[in-house]
Length: 197
Picture 1 (cartoon, one colour):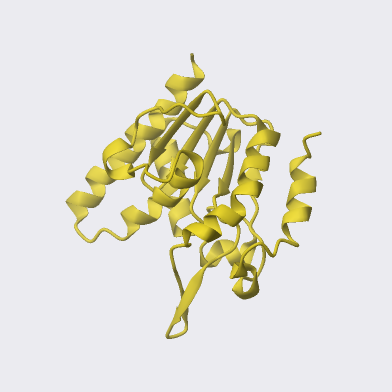
Picture 2 (spheres, helix red, strand yellow):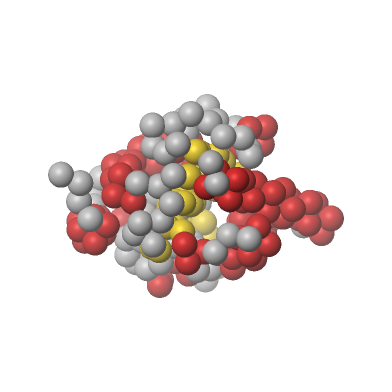
């Protein structure tokens, strides 16, 4: 029998399937509408998410909120989670900087992601960034060339990938950043198209 998100959240706190739990403040499980028709999947929690215990509440989350608003999608109607539930970081000075999770860490967390998706039963899944796309779609998926296209998946009727908002935050050139933001908004607009079908 499928477990509820509340049960899964409780169980995930004790996960020791990979070493990331040891340096994280806490497990950051998904949040949002438990019966959402749309699930957004990011890579992993960042520094603020690790401290607050919620996904997408830091700088990338604020940029995602702007993009969702521009796309006409209400975040309150979504379920938002990450492929990896613990913050992987390295210390630089006094700051904890994001470090990309290894494939084995993504694989160790796959059980939680798949069980979350099974509990929510979404109509649309959007993978944000390469790590999420590899977790949700397949290990060979390239966001740079395949973003914004619906792909076949047993997880939901409509699955696509787009940029992770944090990738936009790292861009230095303002024109490049603006163009990438417009592409992200365009991809997020596909959510409404899929929901209408």
